[in-house]
Length: 485
Ligand SMILES: [Zn+2]
Image (cartoon, rainbow, N blue to C red; front, top):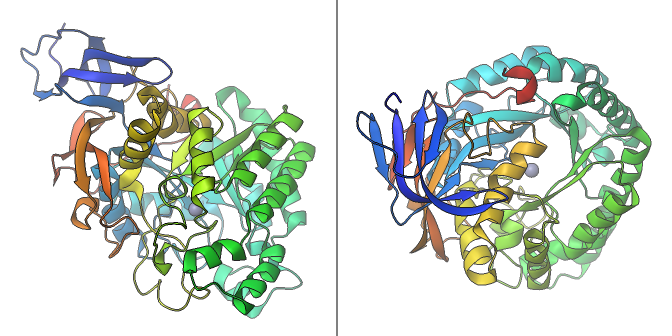
């Protein structure tokens, strides 16, 4: 056997769906080339001693917002660095036309190559995009996006429905830079087309629509109630202003439309017990439709029973500890299939104003293993192989990266997070490697830290040092079964 480019020696390798096995891994030409005990390191270009460490498949953070609040290329570099420091090797980020992101409109045939061009110079990790169709023209591009563009996941934002209705307000027009409503009639056309293209390409993996399920009409009323009679605890007020049952309502609305359009749906960032139960309910009611139930790091790691700053405002809101405990149960019992950060690097400028006017969202991608190990494995006995499933194998399968990504198998990309599951440290801004000037988790202690990150055989982060560079990351065209032979 010819020498390896990299050998990872003596680690406890975490195989998704299987378990933990102590073994060596040999890497050649960016791929896993051998999985066996006692690999001969003679002639290997690089050897990593992983004794006492756990070797996870590199995490795939499949919900991200690169470029939402900062220039896209700059944000891709700083925030993929943050991701890499935490053991994330692939980022799937949301993108739409209009203000924020690239501040432009037009067909994705023109905008996607520009987006990928900027990204290829900027990312340290591999990456892909989920695209929001904002116009009828975008809907007509879906088949091209899957076949040529390398994008097999789309997005619909329910909360834009209201602001674009009835001819739209001037603010909505200037923000989204569209003059068409994106109401449920639009969603119906959108889902029908996703359903049609999914049928065409289903042998290569599902073509799916991600939906942020919150009902803006209900929120308009409930927010006014809370504004008139606030408790003064910002995160509780924000949660009451967007109650859990409007998530339940929105999930049912989306699911009924999915049934009649045959459209697979990713139910994003389920924040509450009611939302998860609605997800279970529609999955059982319409077994012929594929629903993916997604969990979020901040809904698992934070509760509004903690003393959180207003900067922890996010949609859907941080809920009570009771909801958090329910989400963990749903994650451990395989109801929630993926865990994501919904990372949006927010400047303090964007967080200015009161509870109602400051911008939602914040970053947290580097906490993937911290939260899953500390709150999942150590506190609740979540098995390590389950952690590898929700952070890597499942997102790879649902978002058409598998088995190039998300698998510890011969021929898969050599992406790894080498983790010390027993190291305990406090969160500081320095160990998040982000451009964000705050974090709701600052000062919290976590047991379980990523130590070394390997992207296609290359070490991009090692013991506190960023060793990767902007441009190391590649655009991964999806479905990989269609685009890579
Ligand atoms: Zn998001």
